[in-house]
Length: 340
View 1 (cartoon, rainbow, N blue to C red):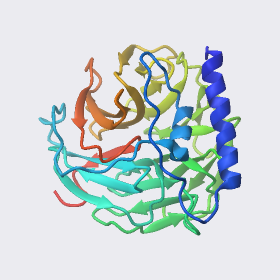
View 2 (view 1 turned 30 degrees about the vertical axis):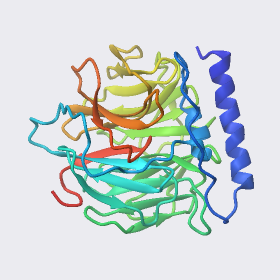
View 3 (view 1 turned 60 degrees about the vertical axis):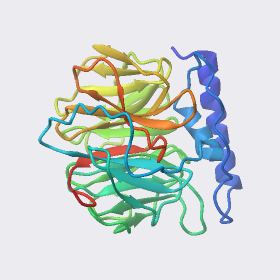
View 4 (view 1 turned 45 degrees about the vertical axis):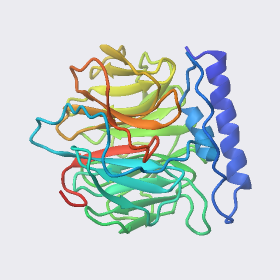
């Protein structure tokens, strides 16, 4: 059960979103400030992301094209992974190879990117929650190897956060501005389906059968393809955050009440494993071969890193990227974008 403090943080964050939506204008982005210092033992919920997204997150700048302190569970895998690391403050996506080399950067069409997802073809999508004249409340998509958007979606988008794309190329967007999830068939810019939910949806995932999973308030709900009615999975997770679903239907979820990564077997409600994270975890990305899990983590000192862990047998995370190029948005793909 959530503590009164956690509930209060979520309520305050929801109120902040309403204020932002009403008060922001075309004048430009919210001012950037410094991230509040992390207190020992403090627990941040996903809703604290909303406070960071209001312009109070760490201002990050890439420092060179190689990361330090590497250990990679995927280094022996035949499928090489590229890591896409978004930066809310600088409106960039920086792309790295699995060896740590910077392969490129996307800036066009981005404005305060909140979440990223790379689809089966290697196209990367971003939800943009910022305001910049006509470029606000959007989803932008970029073909593999390209840095200008081939797709921009604004219809039905309202303060977008969660984002996922299924095997057919259908785009799903969580909108905290009006508590909806909008669904866009491949290449389309108007929603074919709008799902209303009870409270702010922040994270989405799909499985191999195109079922949609959504973090909705303190619940994780599952929606059958084409359905607008979700089923509460009753997961025994104190405060669910970022989600991933592996090829077998097992759910990976961040528990923001305990800063743990929880593995929940398909059809079960209790975690089979809980992995503690040092710092404050925000985003998850699972490699295509389902062998490496990547996590964006805000360190106690303030900057974000990308950590990784061998899935599903790893027991602790190791720093993967420490270039200070991004913050919470992270996604991964096979080695098929922006060079090799």
